Length: 156
Image 1 (cartoon, rainbow, N blue to C red):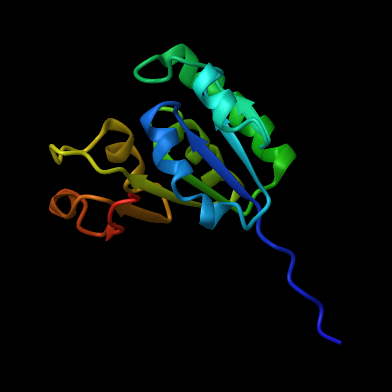
Image 2: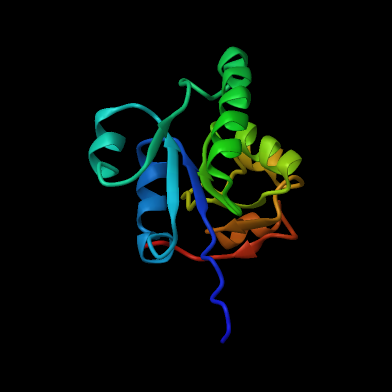
């Protein structure tokens, strides 16, 4: 008799609003696996994710050094407890502290630079491009900035 493999656990790391909406569009993928979310404590996120495991990070996260360090500590606590095999993020500033800790803990990571009309790299994307295991872009023009990235296409 062959033992079945235990399914991987996925940590879904995202800011609320558009980043969370983009990630939620991939539900047919991540919902097949045990998973948890790390996001903002706001009505949109809490309502959309009411049937999922949610951890609330410290916000604002963009360019806020105090919350960056609070989120580094939070990332260590959550990732040590949940023990995911993969982290996936659509951004924004919540991703770097979690991906840094994931790297230290040997957890695989995927970052998606989401579709924007003006193809400018984000600060999170610039930070994580060389840190993440897989880097995806939704705008082909961003392949000029991120030559090792893979084009993913739109979630819509």
